[in-house]
Amino acid sequence: MGEPRLTEPPGAIVQEIEIAARPETVFPFLIDPDRMCQWMGATATLDPRPGGVWSVDINEKYRARGAFVHVEPPTRVVFTWGWEDTPTVPPGSSQVEITLTPRGTGTLLRLVHSGLVADTHADHTKGWTHYLARLATVAAGGDPGPDPNAAMAST
Image 1 (cartoon, rainbow, N blue to C red):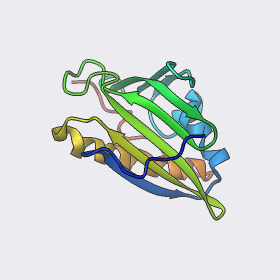
Image 2 (cartoon, rainbow, N blue to C red):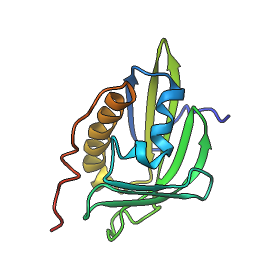
Image 3 (spheres, rainbow, N blue to C red):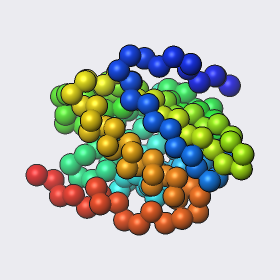
């Protein structure tokens, strides 16, 4: 098992959230397509092995694409990230690392998104804040409700 980084890359987005569920409960929501779509994305294709596909369609306009880099159940997932049809952050051009650390009866989730172009930080920070809150709800057994982003029509 790899250890989480102690020093983050310059300019990385770093977010942490407490989840009222153990890492063993949270982890499948990061690698199983059906569980992924309960908190992020309308559709997902995930092949959780190094080099495997990481593909999540938030809606018909926003389609995130990348590949798994590391999969270490139940504590760590790393995948590349980018947007299909977007030259600013093309598929696979940045990296997301999620670590799950037991904390009491729950989990501390830490997300580090590195390699982003600076002018995309605000949008990605807003997006991760939204989706990590939804993950915390569903992993703890709640219903986050319909994702307003999934209903956005393409323009």
